[in-house]
Image 1: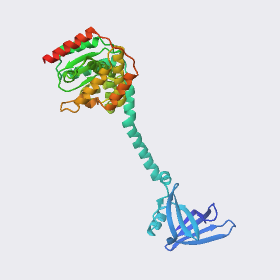
Image 2 (image 1 turned 90 degrees about the vertical axis):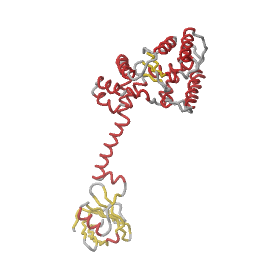
Image 3 (image 1 turned 135 degrees about the vertical axis):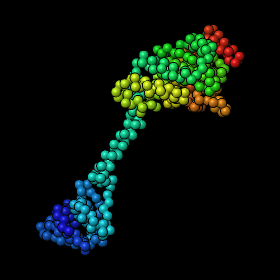
Image 4 (image 1 turned 120 degrees about the horizontal axis):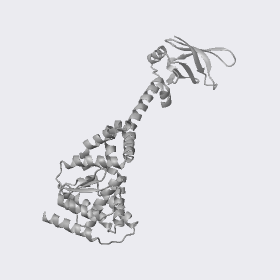
Length: 364
């Protein structure tokens, strides 16, 4: 088989020579003109071939040894490849760059790139976009959304009216430093749990409330959840978890569509997990709230210690799984307290509400 327009490298000169090649059953005959203008013909036995590489630009590089290492660059044509394969020299890629530069490599690279973009969109870009969108929502819209979520949640719970009123009286004496109007509700549920909805609702299960021993612990709990509200952690966490569902609504700026998705998934607030940074911010906000209100911030440590002890019991502790009281978290709170100077003052109204709350708990 005659193959024109080849390039032959004789192993002596750095540049190649234009050549014509003839592939036959016995070997390869290479004809070229040397640098001194003389016609040269060499015959290469297939057994002398050491490697055949596929090069970008539909070329083959045939490497063989004939006193020196020599190369023949030919067109990548099916007939040549068939002959080489028959003689036991299947072409391979010399490097990953050669493979990427080939037609097949380019197609695979494009497909791989497209898959990478889709995965990045799915796992990173969409959640980031949803979180950004959640942070920029007007407070009025978030409050309206939170009310809808609260109404959806409260249908399946029984409100403890007495404890709700007492905790509200207790919270009324605390400056939470937030633009949100906080609405606290105590519900009958033996689980150790408390959580905040977007917009300002804080739900406390009496299973957790009944475990608290001091007013400082209750302050720490409420201040922690109030910080989640102020920083929009609930909305952002829900938006992130449901980002794939609400992505189209974000693109279309369809707030009603986002609202529908979030309300339909209101139950996820019971077990919503915040990021490590969100928990750290909420703990820091709780300590700062207690310092600002002249309440001993060590109550936050007491709360975390209480929760950590409950992990070892057989009781239900949803709050512990969503707000893990790790030793690292306790250590962080201690560091935050050391960074804040505080003095403790009694608040008769707050103490009165706490005492009445404990009486109602003891009667039960």
